[in-house]
Image (cartoon, rainbow, N blue to C red; front, side):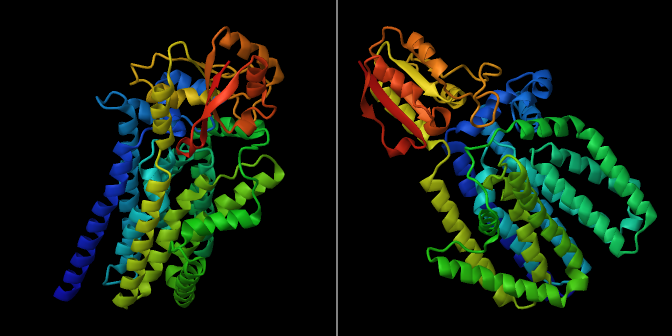
Length: 514
């Protein structure tokens, strides 16, 4: 290796480290500045349950497997705010993902005798700055953990797939444990796990179908199934009980493809035609590179395409046959194989000016979109706005009614510091988790019931002789489709005297007086 080559590699290494450090700015800002929002409050609540309840009781009504919450529970021993610690855990997962992606792409580059490090730098830039990955890197939810496990599984699977006939027991065991840990990350994660098994089956078949490798593949699948049996049982039960999922936008193939494109696009521009033109131009060039080097890069291409295609396709098929389980956030992990796919193509690119333009445009557009996301919809900002509004509106003897009951989780955290607001609050129709108290669960979650006509008397009893009632609601058309709450208030002689503004959306806050 010449001195010029070494200097070039050092330059790209330094540039990669600089990108990672710069990417920490928005992530740390979101970690420490924004209050916890609804879904993150779930994490705090679950992590405060006992380990026994986490693995036996919580899965009966919570769609996410308990492993992530168990990890978070272990972190509660640290002398810091739970929300901050949990978000920092996601940030650590994001850093591991960046390293794993860089190691994978570097390994492919070494196999192809690439002297430059364009490809490694690009994947570091892509994974570090991708707006969706940045968003979930500072969120106390299991998605950053899931993405990290996918990156580690990609590294392990590619290592085995290169020579399945030579992979020993240790490599297969490591791969099996990683896939099991991935499966426990989220109820949709087994779809990504399945992609790795299809990939390894295809790799072994392409290399002549080694009997020992097929045996190890089957044994690995059996081991993972055994390890994940409790989780798979609860996932199947959740899907069967997901009654309609009417709170989720109904999926179509066009909708799914649009969301996948959003994850994989290479630019965020104000002009749609410019954005699509740039993205299509880049991918057209990438296709040409792969077609010219299909023998050398075919294995990496197959791994990335399987991960990109299988999960959203399977979710769409489930939606066609039963409940709508497709949520855009479930395919955020696709950003990882998209980044690797592009970076591997750059292994065969020698022109540093082309790579420089690609990196600059990608970095600039990703940074712009990240800034837009962080400023237009800050995490939990509406809860803080509600807290301010509540302090301004509060009067002694006020009663706060809120719907759905799951709002109690973030409210208890946000209102904890308001010592000057000793407010009585009531969850409608029953305190979370309201299991078995209703037959109307419009979001498909057997802990968050909606209001029915039978709850009108309950509302009247809770209000009693009070003359002022504060009402906080979210997705009211879903949880109270018959307007039981507001109709009951009208029957009791209450009228709305104030409604809060747009700064607390998606919440609605109204003041009622007799």
